[in-house]
Image (cartoon, rainbow, N blue to C red; front, side, top):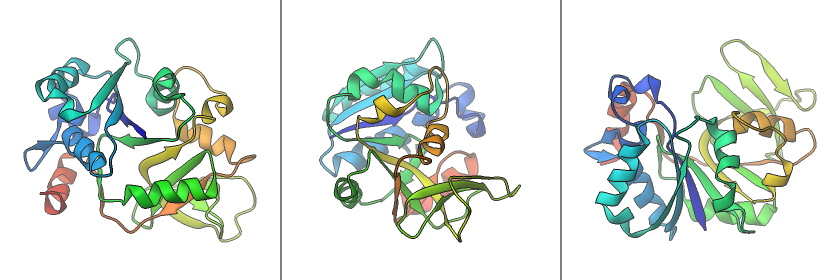
Length: 237
């Protein structure tokens, strides 16, 4: 199985580090996020990666080269000309991923210990084209699921704004964990082009397609701000 790691973002919340570096190279207990996530996925037998780059992308390429790609096959999806966000970045990387096999997507700035084997097994059992890792934790935005853990909506916790596929019948609010398992048939379903968030596409597709959530109770830290680096260092040594 291949994994696409989103490492292109500007990481503005991690300033001042990201004024001169990509957020994927921010360190937790002295080890860069990108290195941690490559080794995390390697522990589940994944050694084939696509990494998208934009902000200080040359530093990521150099870092991988200096470390011999951590013994993995790594292809670079180079968005130097334009940062395409998660949806556009997925489409841009299509040539590396559209080979008939399920693949993972993971944000470079997420640290977690989700059991990837369990996640992939669940995805294959339900035979969806998209499965999203989610958990019951604090977040300003939540995805809404029915009793069968099928995506039915989105909620902005702070403003109360909702996007729903149907009337909210006590849907379960869960926070997205930044890890997806995807079948390449998604490339036939996505309608947007250019620069867009893949979540926007999921919220459109939930009207006609089943997108399941995989609920986990694992540790997860979004290392998006300097204070979250301190939080992550408690759990990831």
